[in-house]
Image 1 (cartoon, rainbow, N blue to C red):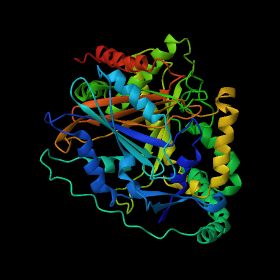
Image 2: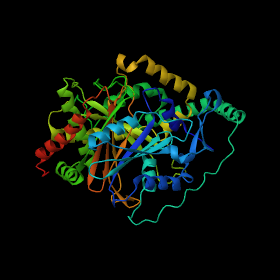
Image 3: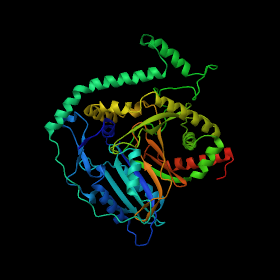
Image 4: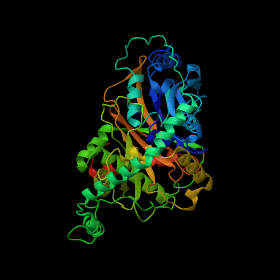
Length: 491
């Protein structure tokens, strides 16, 4: 039995009838022979892993009255057949059908009475390939843990040894309500002290970062320091390079920054990693700068087409892992995020790359102002019952339609994947795209995943707020062409 961290539990508290806390990965695999059976291959692989990998065989055990974060306990009635599923596309089996099926699966909540995962083997693609869609709750894995899981699912060789027979999941004695209440009450007594210590730690970190000296001079020094760091010595105007600005104001409104429904759209496509590397070299930036600029240009074009481009830059939430690789338990969340300006108000593609580079640098310095684990520790002191009630009330009130309160417009993730080929039971992985969460006020999520010589772009959005998601995906590739023209890079 292991208790969820406060950050893990946040992805449970955030859920509502329209907002889901799960994440997914979609892999496209070759078919090594005509008689290859994808479903049996996947079934055997997850059966072999189930007893050893905690998220596969553990379910939630809530604390009475919601006084503390829940626990992971062994599911004594674990049913592999429930979790590993099989379906087929009707002819012709094109990519638009696959995307529609993925969107439907992603728009359904996981059953909290069981281990929080499902996998889907999807056959019927016209080109003979097959897809594996994994669906895990974010309370059990983050992006880093997802990489660990992908490594467990796949092999480094097409000739890997066959999977052993599934091992039975060892039962454990479930805790009773009295024990859980006793633990919860003990934590309630110390949480205020922990919260106060964390507040002092974060405040001191900010003070030290801004170079503020005696406490008696905090107000005056803070004002002077903020004025200093938000503008150049020889200018009245701040630049992204010079400022360290906490994103305390709402982001400009866009069509997808509203209340979402439970329905999703999904679109994916691959780009050449060599092309992006050539753009990186030509621009003097990084591949991540190029990715951010591609997304920026696509969003700009999309908003212009809808007559909805704000005069100020959009802002992106960019997830950042603070894993060290030495964690004893990988199945937990060790992730935070930075907020970066997207220069959607800039008409020049090459200049947008420079501005993205500056904005990411400023966002990283902003991130360094607060200790990496501070958000996780802050979530630890959150009251589960209050957090859940607040999330559901906000959803019912449709706050995102009344005012745009969030400091960001969109989530953009750039996830590094394997540099060498991987296989599953002899079937080679050809493409892989992670799918992540959309919420009220932020109904669009963009993820880019590198694998071998390509970058796979995956977009997930509220079905009603971004009805033309495929068009938005097209604009990303139009922007790649525009950048190639701007820098003289061959396609």
